[in-house]
Image (tube, rainbow, N blue to C red; front, top):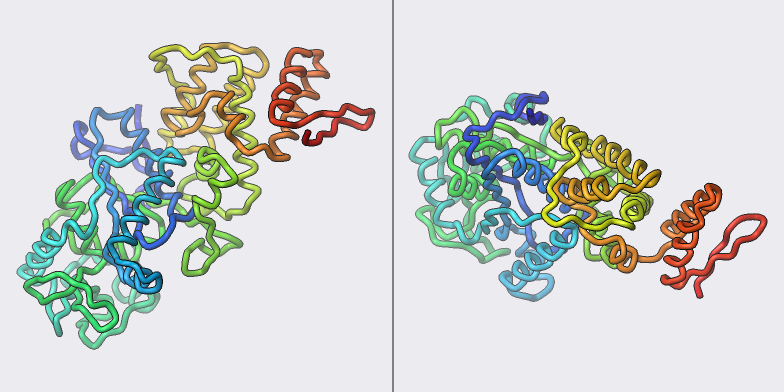
Length: 451
């Protein structure tokens, strides 16, 4: 049984061969904690949660590290604007992030390091880069010298000249090369925040944080590094340069995996553009499983052009799935999965194909209910996709009663009546009645109204 995944480093789908099959090591760039999480933040969390679940089935041990960036100028600006302390802001934001991830059924990583708790590791990392002539100090700043790393640009698939001409680069008279990036910067008038170091009082750059934390928990070389596609350059490119220079390894991570953008009207969803929906806002209208399912409907590597109808579509599908297991009797310690669904996920985490194969089981259950098959559906959905976590009764009680769900049940009732399945027809009417919905059958069709 082989697992195949697209590697951004080689630019092709490869068979996954771990460095150590007894301990798979994975690092994923986590949130910068200055505001509520939006859908764009949630997508990589769900994508790599699917990968984590899959790896845990395939291997006896997986060490999953997802960091928290709590040193960043955006954090400091937000704290100043809100007139609150930095620690108060980051603690509150981290708590909200954890609540949001739990609501969409994202498993906790094995290790979740914060940048503020690893300043010593970061400083030691920088000192060694300076000793190795990969970094230099100018005016209390420490920069990485990209010319000292021959393979700079390999992940992005470009050479230094192309990157210089095609990228937005911070211009500074301190730099030897425009692409050189900061490892440590001094305190300034705007943000009088810093830690003592051999280079002066200051704070680390973003890129060095991830290199230091991944090295501490996973070593200088590990299996998988993940994140959004927007992180390929410069963030992940710079991580590779730092880590490979220090540890003298051919690769920092053997496999680089990236999820596609989440767009709104063709534009990347982001806080700076204001075109985002927070997870908390959406949870007021939809169950967390619905939000999660939106990400599963599109292949992880493809962009998603988000609109509200996608949430309604996801809810409609989950309503049908829950409805198909309405008569289920749960079997204790059941652990049989659908191999067809498993096979789809082994092929580059093809969640759309996995969903279509789940639908085959749903259709079979709707034609003739089979309790063992229903348990296979539930166990597979829970184990791999992170949905069908509730009982059918609790699902239909807890999800918002909306027109899409109501119409779906009316359509199912019409089919049941046509097939003279009056038991199902009556049961659907009863379900709607319990939700305060009354049906009226007329010659022109079935209408509904709230009691």
